[in-house]
Image 1 (cartoon, rainbow, N blue to C red):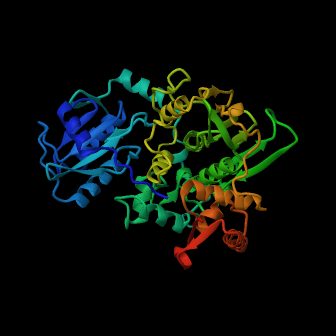
Image 2: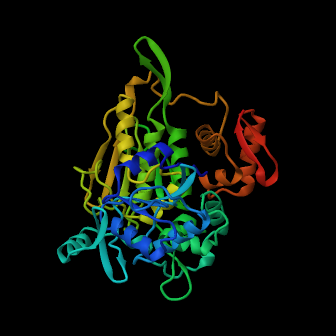
Image 3: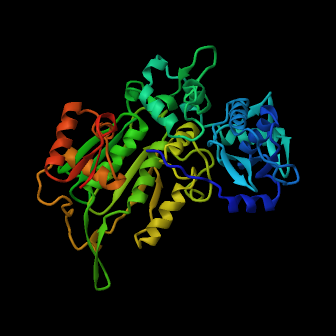
Length: 465
């Protein structure tokens, strides 16, 4: 499911224009051409990011864009000129003074050092300038970790990508609908074309592959629910595999199905509540999958649920200049292509700001602060839920006393969270189950009066009854 999230409102754009051009804001006239635009984009990428407003004069006067589609093509061409190519959010068209302004965002913390025709630029005030030798050496050292997701997958071809997943992605992103798929995936870093024919990168395989684990065996998520506060012999285990979006959905459904629900006392009032705020769980899952180091082959992501806390472990230590001390305030993306595509799909609301939201939501809920730990070879997030604040000590039954399979619990949890489920989405939650079993499970839930069927054939989906 894709979510449209405008980054700038008319009021925000007006306020931005009023600040004037600077090191994080540039004005570019329409029809400036890809080369001119690429200079500013590369310079911002090598510094602290920012916004480029196309259709605005150097003095800040809104001139507008005549051909919106042509301007989108210009931006895409400009993004491909630096080495390596830039992977940026889709440009947004904002109406201001009855004129269209194209807003191109360059996120902070991009992982590469970007060259344009052999030159390394940075942004200084209102202009772009060459990096000094000292500045370039420091930047290369700081950003030297990135790159695995951009490598071509050995032994893979375009036939190893799923056309259905690619089509669904392109149809869900404004500006990409109907685009030539190879060109779009090249711009998104999911394909590479170093010498002739295009080939899948690891980012492309993980996001759109038919069988990603065939090429990256440990690119999966282990999900475990233990009965007590520590690891023991009594547990429920599931392995989430498939593409990264599928793993996110499977992990969310697992937590939702195995999370305790009950009543919490707020003064003298009882209110229904959940063990953990689901937005925080979702951020932790998405961050672990989006930012893990996929070059680490020995292990996958582990999500462990205990009676009093939850741990999400991701292979790979903190990237670049990020430390535990500046984790909340600084930005650096190890996997820029993966993060951007997940953002396009609606899994990431605003790249780089998930940690802030987690901290804020836990504080608003009156729960213990999220713990972030760096281990010898990875990164761990620890969430502590409501614990004994819940009146019930066991998970509250959500669906009465009906006898349901673990798969059906997952399906119902998915519907409760997303509002609906299709056969394909159910199959992504339990990829090892046959299509016929999926059909029987959903038909049984309909017969039990828990969900109802809407639509017909390929347009069929199910909602809670």
